[in-house]
Each structure stands twice: as structure tokens, then as C-alpha cells.
Length: 385
Image 1 (spheres, rainbow, N blue to C red):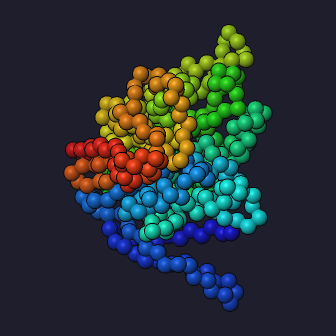
Image 2 (image 1 turned 135 degrees about the vertical axis):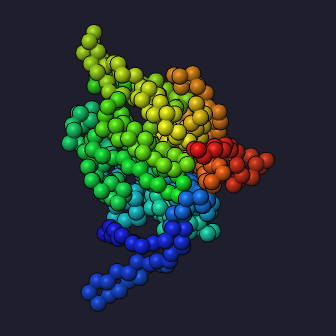
Image 3 (image 1 turned 135 degrees about the horizontal axis):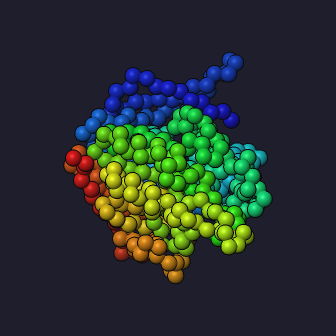
């Protein structure tokens, strides 16, 4: 298996191009199928994008992703957690002899994201702007083995970063390397961050829940984010990150920041910096006119609206990790919309006049009163003047 990267130059904006791959080996020539893609439009022209995340070979991802591929979108924002164990090539691609659970065969990540069922157009036809999640760490044992979890050498993102190499030219695989980027697409500024963690112990047991990349005030990622947002010139701004900005669940009650040894008990930790998503990232989003922030991790559909910023987890793809008794966010904010009874994804349309987002129902799940493909949540935002 090989990865081939090519640079296409002198392309015109808002133009459809057709392509195919051709591989020559010795006297043999193999041609791939012909596909097309549309380049990003000029400022002032409409476009749309789809939010997806957390596929992980789960049930019914093929149906959900195929429906997303029939929305005639121009690109995909993907909020992390592609597979379960990235070192298993068979969870990314169909690979002969590579173990994958029998029930997961045919649901490999690239298989799901390259479907053409009933006219679906996905990664062969459009760019994808991802961010890493906790399942992108090369060695998943750091999330379950206490000894390995404290070994810095085990904390790398080499497989994920190689697969999406053009977005990460520095290829800094290690923890606190540069795992973030930004890009402009028409009138939209896209920011991808590295915000995730996991744990093989209780949140207040030493050494605590450790974020893969720091989001402390003054950390490289936060300094970069503030300068990036200050310098943007587009009418709209969207951020994609894996960890919850807000969430109605128990995990957010363990602050997202550096754990420090409890001075009164060395077997325990405290989080004196508080929650960086709420205290550090949120003020930056509000101050610099971010319109939307989407994330994943809990496999639910939730949307919050706080001080003009929409925070969305659009990751209901056939299973979710929500308990009806889960506590609300520690800030006291409840979701504006919470809908976890059926599969869904979000489509966002951008025009010079407005940005309009629609949560799209992707399954009936026993309710015949609402058609699949219909919108169950909508919101609009005005462009930055």
C-alpha cells in the first residue's frame, strides 16, 4: 500500500476539474476511476459543507455517511476519532490478512468515506478538514495502561498526521507538537485544533487526566490560535476540535487543563487552572467573532448558543454515550437542542447574506412521522461586517 501526494497548480476558483490516477510499474499501467472536484469559490460565492465525526466502524455509519454525501456539499469538517486503533491498517482500508472484527468489515473509515451509493459524492470529490481525536494516538494502550500512559514516547500522532500530511507539513508527531492549522475556503475561515485527552484512571487520581496538547494560557496552540483569529479577514469563522466545548455529561466536570499533585495528598491531583475550554478558548471565540465550533467524542447531537457562538456536537451515527441522568455542563448551560433518538449530521450553507446550518435526520428509528433527510434543527448567522 502506498500514499501518493501531488500538488495541482494554477487551478481557477469555483471550477470543476476531472481527474484519475495512473500508476505505471514496469510495463504495467493501471488506471483508477475518473472523478471530479470543484475548487473553492471566489469571495461572495455560495458553498456548503458537512459536519461528521466519530465513525469508528460503528453500526449504520455507511447509511449516515452516504446520505451526507448526497447533500452536494463542497467539503467536509471532521471532528476526530476516525477508527478505534490507528495502527490497524484494516480499520482504515480493506487489507487482506489484517484483523478487524467480523461485524466491522466493510465499515473501514476510507470505505465509508468513499462511498458512491445512490450518487453519494464524498472524499473523491471534495477536500476534508479534520482534527485529531483521542483515537488518533498511535498506541491506544496509553488510554488503558497506567504505566504506558506515563511514557512520553508512546504519545504520538504519526499515523494520523501521515495520512493527512498536506495539512501538517511540519509532521511533529510528538505530544505538544504542531497539530493545528487553518485555511480559508471562500468567505469562511476554518480553524482545526488539537483538543483531546483520555485516561486509564480516575480523574482525581494521580497523575490525572492528561491532555495530549496543552491549551493552557500562553501555550503554543493558544498563542497560535489568538494570532490566527486576529489575522483572519473572512466574513465567517468556524472551528473544529474533538473535545467538548460544552457537554451534558460527566466528563466535563473534570477540568480540561493540566493536573497538578494535590499538596494535601500526593496520590491525588487538582486542576488549579480550571477548564481551558470554558476559561481560555471560549473567550477567544467570542472576542474574535467565531460563528460555530463543532466537536465530537460523545456521539450525540447537542447544540448550545452562548454569546453569539454556536457550539455543536453533530456525531449521532448509530450509537451515543448519553445517559438520561448525566449532569448538565458545570456552567449551568443547557443545550438549545438535544436530539439523540436518531442518526444525524449537519449541513452548513454559506452565502454573502447569511450562514445557515441544518441538523439533518438520517434515520427513522421507528418514527414514521418525520421523513429522513428532513431538518430537525436550524440556525442562521449574519456575516461579520
